[in-house]
Every structure is written in structure tokens, then in C-alpha cells.
Amino acid sequence: MNQSIRRNFAEYYIYFMMYSILGWIYEVFLEVVVYRWGFSNRGVLFGPYCIIYGVGALILILCLGGLQKKRLYLGKILITPLLVFISIVAITTVLELIASYIMEFTQGGWLWDYTRFSFNFQGRIALNPSIRFGIGGMIFLYILQPLFKKLTDRMSDRTLYTVSLFLLVLFAADVIYTYCF
Image 1 (tube, rainbow, N blue to C red):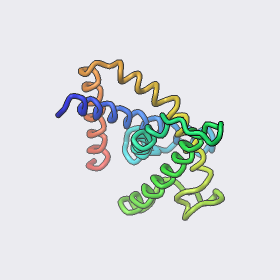
Image 2 (image 1 turned 30 degrees about the vertical axis):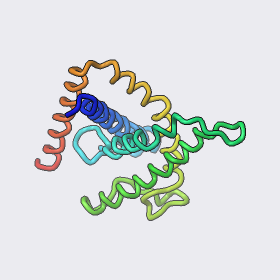
Image 3 (image 1 turned 180 degrees about the vertical axis):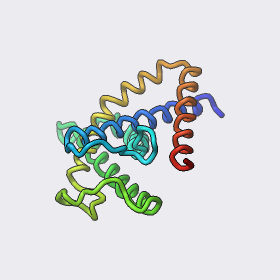
Image 4 (image 1 turned 180 degrees about the horizontal axis):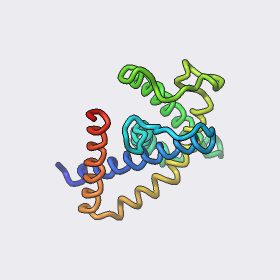
């Protein structure tokens, strides 16, 4: 495998894991601190990850990285951030809808219920969470991802591959533990 492709794959896997874990932390924070419902594991695996956040982050990086770097104007007003925000809302809403159907098919239901929100569709998606995902996506793309990119850029190939392999083994063990025991 080409060294550059191998390095990119390892970086993206680390991003996937970091955002899956951050997504889990966000979900648990909402459940425990904001809504005061008490703790429950918000992921589908034993460990602290919400895979949909990791997948969503990778999709946003791949789909919006180019748009984010452009400087698009409407008259004298820079509209690139607005276009990025709208794109994040659209992509994450569609991803959440698809994920709800996949979870319903594979597990008999999905992990959230938006029926209490206005402008919801079957309790699967709603305007309020979509706007929050847009805001979170902006923080992620403009603040967190540049920091994570600097972190992985500073890693030697050996360190990057070791960390990504360790995370892969840990994740595989979690999948096996969750679904086989």
C-alpha cells in the first residue's frame, strides 16, 4: 500500500475513534447533566463510543473540507461559513435518519426519540437537534479538526500506526465482546 494512503487511513481511523468517543461524551453529558435522566451507555457497543459521530465526522471532513477552504461571497459578505453550516445540518440530518432505519432493522429500534420536538419526522429527526448538530459541526470543523490534524501531523509514521493499530484492536475486542458474550 502506498505510504501516503496508509498514513491517511491511519489518521482517519484515529479521527473516527476520537469523534466517536467525543460523541459518546456529548450524549452522556446531555443525558446526565442537561436532561437529568441518569446515566446510560449511549452507544451500541460496550465501550464509550457513539459510532455515528465518528462516521459523521469522517463524512463531514471528506465532503466539506474543500468547501470550508473556499472564500465565497455574496456581494461583500463572506458566505462560506453559512454554506458550511447549512451543509452540516443537511448531512447530519440525513445521516441520523439513515442510522435510525439501520438501527431499527438490526436492533428493533433506535437510541433516540425526537417526538417531543417540533418539526420532527417520526421521532427520528427534528429541527432542534439538527441545528445543534450544525453548531457542533462548525465547532468540530473549524476548531477541533484543525487541532487533531496538527496532532496527527506531528506523529511519526511509527507512532501514528501504533496508535491506530492499538485503537483498532481495542475496537475489534469491544465488537467481539459486545456481540459474542
